[in-house]
Image (cartoon, rainbow, N blue to C red; front, side, top):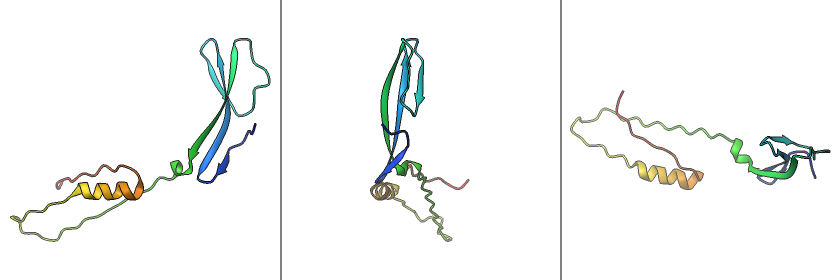
Length: 101
């Protein structure tokens, strides 16, 4: 079995071996263990992770409101904005409206 990480499409595959001991220890190795103690058992594991896991998107928005009538009401629908972002990005975004600090 392979010892190196490799890319398939939009995922990375990480082959590895987990070695468990009867005493509760666990170790990870990229190569198949050549010899095990009597109290150890090896398990081959291949983790498949999306490359997007390493992409950290940065979203920024700015909303500027000009001088407004103090008596006028302003209504922001952040639910619609949140739903639009969820649909476009496939993630949940925590949107909040805060007053001036």
